[in-house]
Image 1: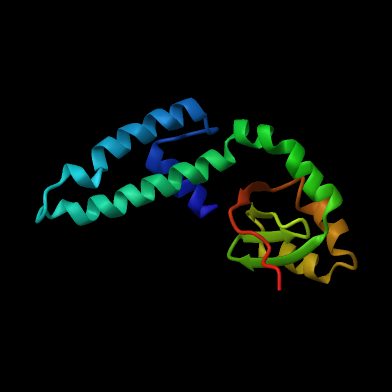
Image 2: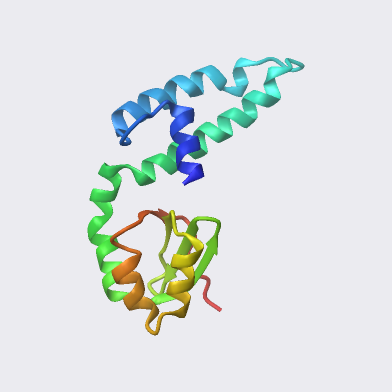
Length: 149
């Protein structure tokens, strides 16, 4: 959740993510912080490189969570959570990352330790996730894929 708020703040977004507005703000920030804009030896050059990376990462992160993106990818997401079992999962802070047997990975935000403990202790991991995780928490598709061993 912290990451979501941090990126929304970076782009000056108050409410829902609107792709058109996000793209416009992204372009303006890239123009402002593009590393080529600063000459060698300029004290802001290194900061510009860090800021531009942060802007690019934030843009891709927020695009993956935008309602339009989620709506477009809803059939694939529904197919994954309906037909694939949980192959692996990791919890760190308030982030739960679930990798499914079809190879896709989704990140769920706002998962507290008690909710995670209930999931781990549930008799049926997949049933618990279908009832208590998938419909209730903000998610996005992660770039990670299932590693075949």
